[in-house]
Image (cartoon, rainbow, N blue to C red):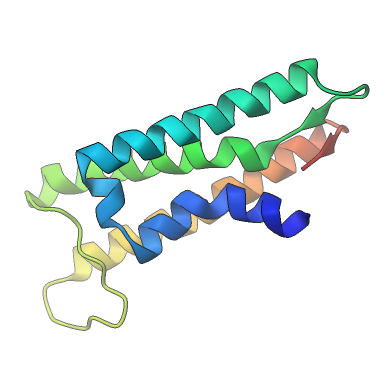
Length: 129
């Protein structure tokens, strides 16, 4: 069951890694935002109206946080470079240093945010999924 919670927590990060175009295209991004928002609302409702004692669901909150991080970082990158960031995995062409920094920072901060949500849930003293 832990794999399912981890997969639900990291699906936006995985989408950015494997199929970034879905996060950039407006139509698919709206669908991803809707699913992420539904997960977030479900996490809040399950925590508030769930079992006794309450259970926190940081794995359902993380997709919305990861999507917000991606959109914020993408906005800064587009303003700075006047183009979309390029996936630089195994792409060593010169002139892509800014794209490499974007990718490194997004995935590093995204993973730390995911871990941070779990740490914050653990600090509450409540059980979490």
